[in-house]
Length: 179
Image 1 (spheres, rainbow, N blue to C red):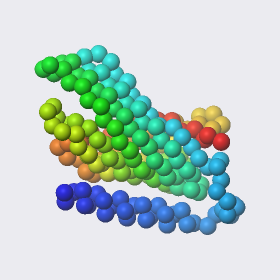
Image 2 (cartoon, rainbow, N blue to C red):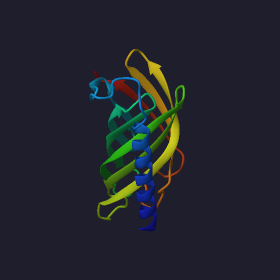
Image 3 (cartoon, rainbow, N blue to C red):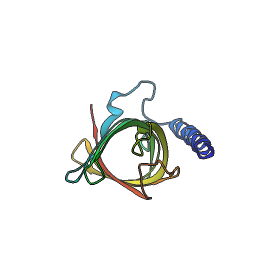
Image 4 (spheres, rainbow, N blue to C red):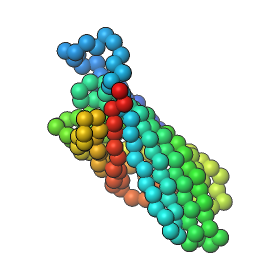
């Protein structure tokens, strides 16, 4: 419970910092909500065999200004482990909120708060598990509207029920401007 309180307080502070950056005055017209600043994307993973894993993690975000992005995302993970005694199948789902701050050309800082709901041990009831990630990444422009991303993240709330077995976590994804 103590680590959850620390993670919650840390996330609230990061959200406030993000909103402060969002208040930076821009020379562009900021009086109107610009739908061209929306982007979508995410990442996915597939593994088949004795261990089958399907991970779908879409995201939806907004470019607050030239340097700061904020967004939300969902996660669905299907796991089927045929190697364990009697087999094991799990469906995990949840959501996240994130901020990215571009600090040098294509390099960005990233913070994220995630809540996943799942069966973490055989015979145990479903439970929520929170993760607080900090790290950074590299964004590479691909085409007119797309960006490929690679992120290196550390889970500050690593625990016995964490679905992330070790730090760092590496993610590869794609974003596309939707308008």
